[in-house]
Length: 367
Ligand SMILES: Cc1ncc(C[n+]2csc(CCOP(=O)(O)OP(=O)(O)O)c2C)c(N)n1
Image 1 (cartoon, protein in one colour):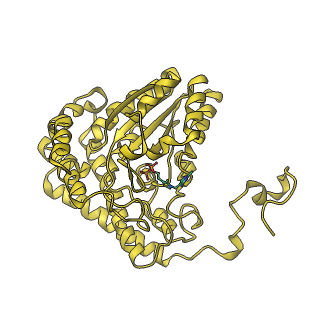
Image 2 (tube, protein in one colour):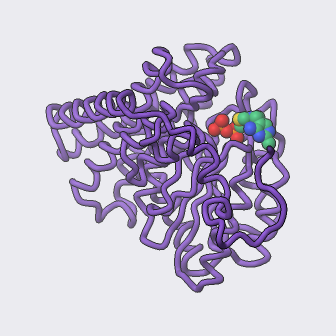
Image 3 (cartoon, protein in one colour):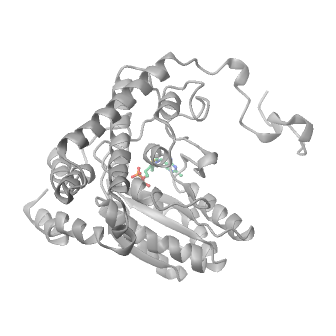
C-alpha cells in the first residue's frame, strides 16, 4: 500500500478501538451480556479455525473443486446473524461457510460437505458453495453471482404474502452489484415494499479485479437511490458496528416492510478461492496492513480484555476449543462414507423424490 493510500485509510478510521468502544454503547449493543459478547468472539473464532483446518484438508487432497474462504470477514456474518429472530431468513452467495456456522450449523456437517461425504449438510453433493439449513432459515449457498438476489427478494415476498413479520438478509459481493438480476430485485423490492436487507460485503475484489477497476458510481450502495431504497455504508471489522447498522435496516424491514441496501466494507485475507489463490493483484503488505489494523478477531479480543469481559486465558481456552472442534470435524468428515451411487438422482427435483405427485410432463434428467 502506498503511503498516501495508507494515510487516507488511517484517516477514515482514526482509531478503530475507540470507534468500537462507541458502538458498544449504541442502543442495540449496550444491553448485551458478557456471555453474548463472548459468544460473538467464539462464533468468529469458530469460523476462522474451521476454515484454516479446511485449507489443510484441501492441501491433503480431501477436498476437491472450489473452496472460497471467508477469513477476514467474520464479524459481518456473526454480527448480522446475531440479530436474527425466529422469522428472519438468510441467503448468500458461494462464500458461505461463515454464515452457515453463524446460524448454528455444526462443523461436522459443514466439513463433511466439503469432503463430499454423505454426512454433509447437502449429503455431499453440494460442496463448499452449497451449504443449506432450511431448519435454521438458511437458504444457501449459491454459485451464480447475484443469482441469490432474486431469491432473497422472493423469500421477503413470501414473508409479506404470508403476513409474517420477519425479514430476509440477502448477501452479495461487490462484484455481484454489477449483475442485472440484482437490479431487477431492487426494482421489485421497492415497488412491492419487500422486507429485505441487501448486504453488500465489499471485500474490495471481484476475483482478481479490484473494485476501482470493476465498478463506477461508488459507494455501491448509493445505486439504491435510483430505486427509492434507503441505503448506507459501514465498516465490517467491528461486530458492534455491523449490528448497529444492520439492526436499523432489519427494523425498517420488519416494521415498515421496506428494503435497505447496506454496503459493509470488509476484506478477505485469502485468494478468491483456494483453487484460484493467485494474489498478484495485491501485495502481501496490503493484507498484513489490514490484519495489523483491523483484524476483526484481534480487535474484538483486545476490546473484551479491556472491558474486563474475559481475561487472556479464558479467550485462549475458547480458541483451543474452536481448534479442537475443527480438528474433530475433519476426522468425522474423513471417516464418513461417500454418498451411494443409488443417490445420484435424489434431492435434485422434488418430483423425482415424490413420483406419485409428479405433475409436470417430460423427463427431468438426460438419459
Ligand atoms: C453469473 C456469473 N458470472 C461469473 C461467475 C464467475 N465468478 C465467480 S465468483 C466471481 C466474482 C464475484 O465477486 P464478488 O461478488 O465481489 O464476491 P466475493 O468473491 O468477493 O465474495 C465471478 C466473476 C459466476 N459464478 N457467475
